[in-house]
Length: 183
Length: 261
Image 1 (tube, each protein chain N blue to C red):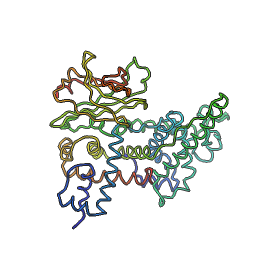
Image 2: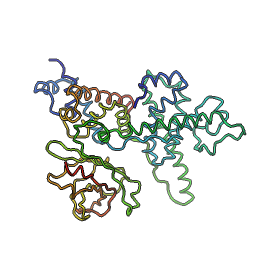
Image 3: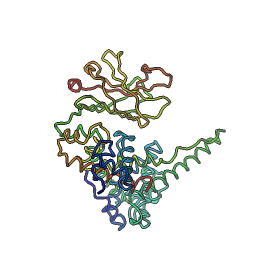
Image 4: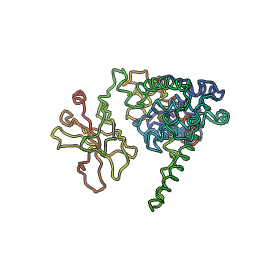
């Protein structure tokens, strides 16, 4: 799929460009939604949180500073906060219900762990790779094929496969460092 | 000695025996190269633990409609105060402006939603299944990927109606492999993958899925896949028994073409 480069999306967003929110949503909507879905496990709740994240991001765009971190990382942080808010609110509700029912409160589901965040950021970035590079990276990760066998299977020159692997690993790693849990 | 070629470091991180003995020696003694190798190997480990399954789901189109409406310009915010409240869980139906004048912003939102829906459909169509599943749609003619099948729950087990899975079969020069991913809730016990014969009784255990509910298994050489043509994932209790628990979570059939290869 062709989406604008992350830097362009980020610049349009900081500048408050009218189409920027749509660009940001197209680029990061799935990541935010899936983070919420993994934590809340209910589609309607995940949709609510996704809406809250992008509305809050749009209203708070003046506080986003590209020099201090990536747009993706900033959105991941907002998402985690919104999920935490949502869970706190739900816990309050369930505590009231439980008190009415004479029970004791149980632990609410947790905000997404660092590992869940990293996995989703990785899946998201893999989906952004150009088709042939994504194929090469998928085989390199998930099959037992060596890079020579991958070149053979995909009928790509060996040099192309090597360069896809080197650049692919480096790009995925950079994205993870920029947007992942440790950013 | 110059630093190790980045391509060799990348291949090493993937677990390939790349580079020369001199490269090995250099990496062992060079903090920079070792740090880079560790950095890449951590990424590879994360990718392999996560597995190729579980592609990201696209949010439904109405989410964008709600965002566009709520984050619109000041006039929109004033016109639809309920939607503008980010903390409000209100559905669009409950948040319609009371005035008789139809909201232009609202219509714009619908159009935006329709466009976003189209875009989302496109994304699901071409990019939604990152990973090995992509191979099936790729035109690469020499691929030895033999089959990809969907695994579905069985009608007699309504408790698994939301479970799903995929199985991707591929062949190397010496073996046939099957990569299975399962989307199902965590349960006490573990998920086990089986090849099921046509008679519904004989079966071959391929192995257990990991905690991410994925696994890649070697099909025993010589297996007649015309007979053992179905893949079954069971939930096994921790009771020490090695036989199928009779709790089938999902199942799928290999196409005949896969058996012939």
